Length: 111
Image 1: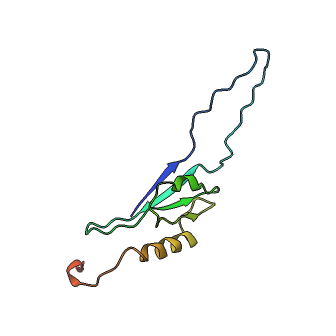
Image 2: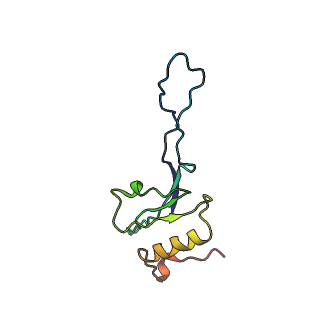
Image 3: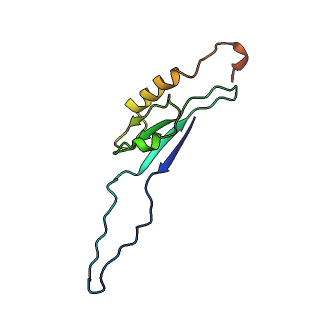
């Protein structure tokens, strides 16, 4: 399992045009208060993998799902936390794509 964050807004302010006489120039700030989106992906060395599982912050951005696999599901975590309800959503999502096997070849004892 890999969890990575993606900034969805630019950190550089845009250029603003104003007259020379103006002493205070305001800019339009981004309406996004939570530009950070978390994407979780699960891969297995044996081959199976799950589609990406994006977790949006305060603002859900459907444009970030453009071009993603049709089976991609997303979640909403307003406090940027992947615990609790979001974690359960992720586990239910993974159950559809990851099949467990109970062969003893992959198990070993540490004691």
